[in-house]
Image (cartoon, rainbow, N blue to C red; front, side):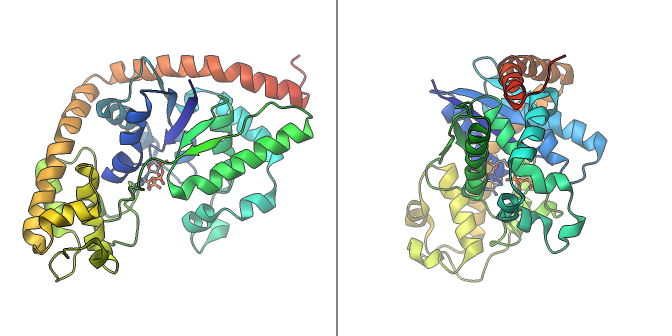
Length: 332
Ligand code: AQP
């Protein structure tokens, strides 16, 4: 069975975007892969996080993943900071990766914005840590959105350079797993920006713990245009907000834009938003209820994460110890 690694940052409450673009796919992959699911708190602090909130968000993220169907018994669910191997290997990779390679990473440019000098060094070196996350387990498959492809190519460049520099065939080539048509969920306030858990506006996103009223209100207030829905998918081309709402509906009913428009084309946004709100509530409320049940016993969630970290360390520690030996570190 091929080994999969994937991570999610506890930088806020997970959103409908994280669910449709990542978590839901993770659950499907569990059927025929050995999976390591990681709450990547080391990545989260590349942007400042309030410490108490980070602690709480890490536990909540784990609870949401469990509530969505992540299996912590057949697979492994853990916190990145609880497995030392990630940071240890990342340092070696900081010394393998070249500045020129990182300078080409478009996500850093996007996330750092105009004031690059003020971005943390961690945000810049983020792709090296991501490479370490994967290579520490000799994972060969990584489910990613399109925005992460460049980072995976870098992870392969790092593996090749390490292998070349130390004259070994140690780190493996990684393949991206692209899951079906890209479900990229956009902000409810701006159809050209992706929905993000750290967006300052809570109205821009559906949180996985929003209740029915909050979901209905956010969808009712979602930005749209004055035209009714088109009857053909091509009619969504220049209408990012309409396309986003139709895309969410399609993803939640496992159909495509055309399938949704066959039913709702020609309707105004009033009735369509009502139908969408009902659908989102129907799909998310059982997950929110299960998340609340799990969080009522925080020690229980922590015990699952502790067990996961032990099992993850049992895989990663020997691999990273071997990488250190290859580099020439004396284990005195
Ligand atoms: N809007 C989205 N639509 C589809 N997929 C999405 N993902 C994130 N946003 C959307 C996918 O979720 C996974 C985990 O993401 P992450 O937490 O590691 O970082 P991110 O992509 O930066 O997610 P956010 O929510 O936007 O976090 P912040 O606000 O902290 O930057 C990834 O597989 C991602 O593709």
